[in-house]
Length: 626
Ligand code: ADP
Ligand code: MG
Image (tube, rainbow, N blue to C red; front, side, top):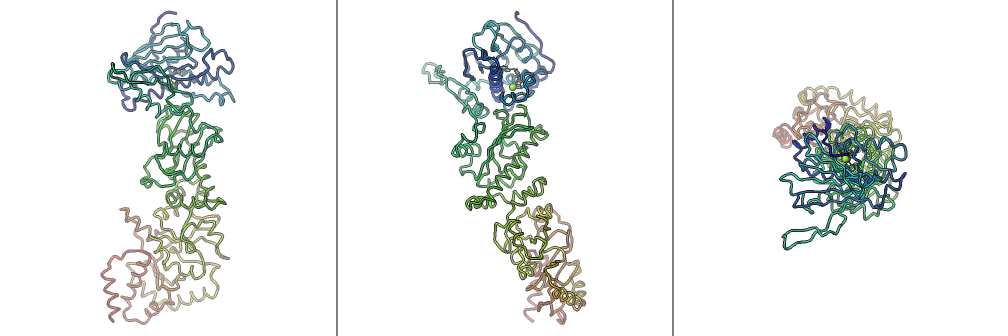
């Protein structure tokens, strides 16, 4: 074989054109790609040598070396992996339809694939070298071939490439980049080390660079010829769980999260099945300042076969788990995967589902732990992230039941930490629904007149004061077969909880009070859609309720604060016929003032604002002065 000039396949020409003319940002990824190819070549050698140990020749330690020549402006990535024959060089570096890795993978079957731990997806990583180089020279010899069966491949990345035979003693490949004008900053050990640390730290074989020392004559750092490993060479998450200490997990969390506090919990698993991946996920102890920004990208880094792909891969976690930090390392995704591709990938969907389940499992094991200290951790978690987790009720229907069990509330029985399960355990004989009220603050919720009859009967009511609660409740209708029912919506039907005498009394009151109700309706016709006798009040004269399906006053206020128009529906006023103030209505001449005040006070009690506070003050003053 002599020196030959061959033409790139049309698709390669297209890619090269793209690479050299439109990739200006993140140029440094070429190093990630070339190191990844070197690592693949070593994986392939390891695999083929399973059947033919002669391939090891006399170099059993697989490694990658990165070095440069500042005068010649060249940068070389050397590996002692499988290498390329002349035919392979032509085929793999001249066409993309047949990726060598791909062909190799096709030859693998069943179990062997898992052992080999190979990458094997269609990619164009090699050509990324042309982002920074105007010529690439590859010198290689395939493992098992004779020294004089080496090959030199060379191209300026335009229309064609050259191949010629060479003699090469050592197995494996040198990829040498002749850097373009202006790319000299890659001729710096410091720069190269930092790129390797960023993208390739967790490549599992050593990446070596030469130590440098200061040369007085040259007034520069020069290579000493002493080689040192510049990457960690073993990704924490690829090690078996049993061999990683708690301290190492904690350290790793700090590295990836920039959080000085220890994480609350973590989980580390290898998932096998249709898609294979490793997950190492952490729940932080403290919420970040920008937790409420739903556009914020998640905290999970994506690796493919130990090669770093991207930070904050939001497709790996649902939005409501945006606080989770960690790493997912996929065995199946292509290295050149983009954010857009991630959104559509079925593998990614499976990973997201798997990660979600793990995080929920982690939270469940804190929440249901026999150890009180672990349960305290859950309480702390809830305080920091509970309101975010609630978003999941509406967004993740598949896990709604699990999420509902993780919810914690304040109630009329306890100021915090009440779960639906606790509530259900305390339900009264004959009670069917789970009662709740939404309000702007805990204080308003606690003193709501709507709670009175529930208090009197010892019925627990959940007090919901998070902004997200109303929205959450529009997606959650029941827990464990018990309907969720607002005590401020619709007519209270206490059903079996009310005895016959009480029911009868209420009906009679409604009958005798009918004329007053009619007058009230007329006086309040612009403010209330109905006025009726209440069964929920004990001490207060009146309260405001909305009909089932209408939005509550609390939600209307939230919408208004957010600058949105709430649909305008009038509420219903309920009056307590046993109250002295209401009784007075039957006889008092100042009926109109009293009616308006009754309504205004009911509105104030639920945290609402009066449209005309001055008018209210005048009316009250008139009454007080009389
Ligand atoms: P991919 O790695 O996804 O296959 P690349 O464009 O990065 O795509 O590489 C193309 C092919 O070139 C590889 O599949 C491999 O066959 C060959 N190749 C690249 N670098 C090396 C190397 N250092 N040693 C052996 N083969 C290599
Ligand atoms: Mg590659």
